[in-house]
Image 1 (spheres, rainbow, N blue to C red):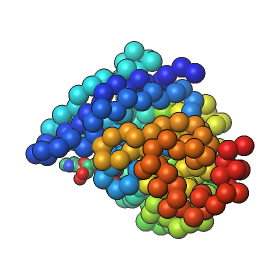
Image 2 (tube, protein in one colour):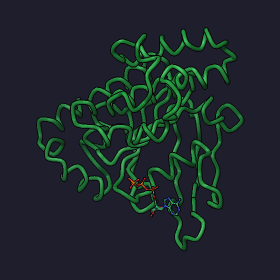
Image 3 (tube, rainbow, N blue to C red):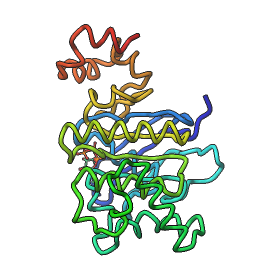
Image 4 (cartoon, rainbow, N blue to C red):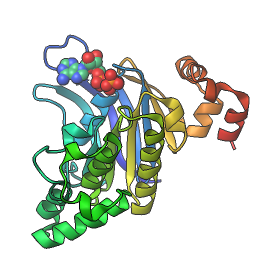
Length: 260
Ligand SMILES: Nc1ncnc2c1ncn2[C@@H]1O[C@H](COP(=O)(O)OP(=O)(O)OP(=O)(O)O)[C@@H](O)[C@H]1O
């Protein structure tokens, strides 16, 4: 499998912080895979995601290397799509849903207003928004949290980025909607031949669809491997503890199933 990005000895220190938020991270991201970045709060997951996307805040010091197969860093919003925990933060409250889904496509793909609207309609249908024609003309506050997250996904994918980074995209949603959003991301990434980096604190959620998991703790990568392998035979004591803390994952039948 080819590496979309080879990360070596990545370290990040935020301005004014004595200790690095991320250190010594060696990881390859494979083209077309669904990789879950897993860790507890503060483990450095978002820092890792922001480093990949080139979205670290001003003053953050970055060391080590990110080598991209394309030969250049991907452009955020064009080569990399980003979906955040809170869709309201990534949606503009004064733009209609149609305008925001079309915005990136008009800017990056050079679509006209009319083509942009047609593309937005198509994207809303692809993320299974009920009544996409009507939804084109409403504003974010008129939608439910789950629908807003579908719109944010449609907007991120409208320019067909090669890599989608989703940072806790379901943690503000209830369980049923969470499962729907994960299934949607899984479907879209498979259909589009995209690479997905999915950040979550929930190893059980990730194990349902990720090809590979990378476990972070205190800014370091403690373990990485195929999801089924890591679940069935974790190498690090920390990973074992994380799995054991999820009753669903620790019960033997599910481990056997995951290890098929
Ligand atoms: N902009 C920032 N300035 C200073 N410190 C930061 C900043 N963002 C994150 N940190 C610190 O870096 C460390 C890693 O944070 P990060 O957000 O990457 O963790 P996380 O695993 O994504 O956690 P969570 O799940 O809570 O978002 C934490 O100690 C956090 O306080």
